[in-house]
Image 1: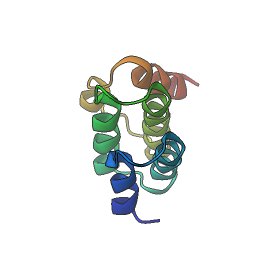
Image 2: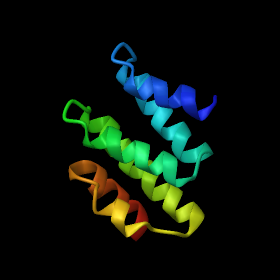
Image 3: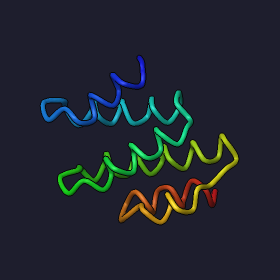
Image 4: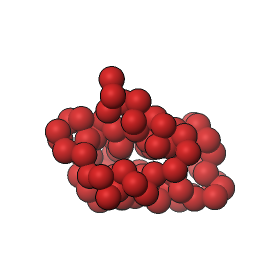
Length: 93
């Protein structure tokens, strides 16, 4: 699936949490760039974001940074709550 379609799933209020979680995981595995990381940060910081999805966003961000061997500390500082915890746990492991 292409990146724009995955982005659309994440902002679609009619998409199920399972669809959104799958989209987050696929983004982390297939699109390892700053645009994807920034989008996942924005999704995880939305006030109505489900905790499971926010956690998956953090995991995917951590995986992207490990794969690219680059941690963007400015972006890391924008993460909150469970997304931050998950990103840090991936990086530490």
